[in-house]
Image (cartoon, rainbow, N blue to C red; front, top):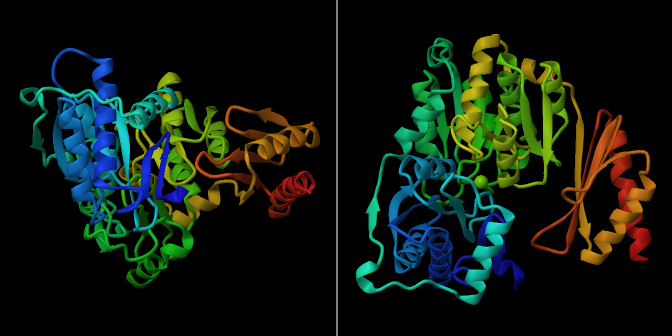
Length: 456
Ligand code: MG
């Protein structure tokens, strides 16, 4: 089955025990090792390796490490850490790269491997394609037994990560407010380090699902239907805010003081609202993310750079254009002062700072941001059908501003619609956003009618 093992730009993901075995993880380590060795032939190389809390993580991490060692790469075992923590340690320890055993927000039967390069960023499309080629062709660099890599360990990720995040906010100002924060870490990798961050920020923390057992208390994606227990806790405990993380701690969703889930798009919007309240500049986000961030940037005389979907694309644009904030609408916030990786701890710190400085509640801050309606849909379409749909849509939406850097996005005065083929399945996604719900629905239904006409 195709879903048993999927290799994409963001790494490898598969069903544990069928598509994803120890052998696959070891080969992926060998391929990554060969890639790193080809880029730097001299001297010893080191890679930080960590994992989220899934029960299969320990053995898969062992296999990944074994593969890296067989290519003559030393490994630093970070243990259970969020993906952004691993990224920070790659730089901190001067490593050539990093590997995180995680299937992120995907269901428990999956696990996967995310790779990071020496700059803490996910590989570019070109680098990812090369790693995949080495993996598929099994072009592995084998070294003599005396040259094999060694495995050491490092338990400092939590300390280093929280220190870096605390450095971007005014700890005293936040702590003086004595916020009560509820936290749902879905028994992933984020619980311990996030409780430490919140405690360092002077918060009273009410945590659920904070043990890293990997036995997810609910479906792990931090969407509205999955975090109802957190909403209840916020209401019952009269918390100021609720935070929901995904299992590897790079995505964040927020619940307001009334126990209302506000949606993942608001994680980046609120973080941007704080950053732009202090300075003007540029933000970067992908083509499928809400216009809220454009309104916030414009209010401060700033602007937004749009990129193809994918963390590496957003981070690359942020570095190129010296952006003051960035991320993706799925709750992934990036602040380059911490690292070029989506980081739920960064989002938490920036939003708490916003609450502290304004003295406003989460719902009041949300109400200050112009509201949009976003509708997401998807339908079956192979590559050639998808191309036909895009070219017909270009005729249909001739008056729109068009961006074709990732699928096709049409921008209108009152909204936008983005058509994008999935990298991993014969599916086309359509995302529309407008001030009026009926307008967003109209854009989606126009695309669906185009699709039906072409399929007939
Ligand atoms: Mg994730």
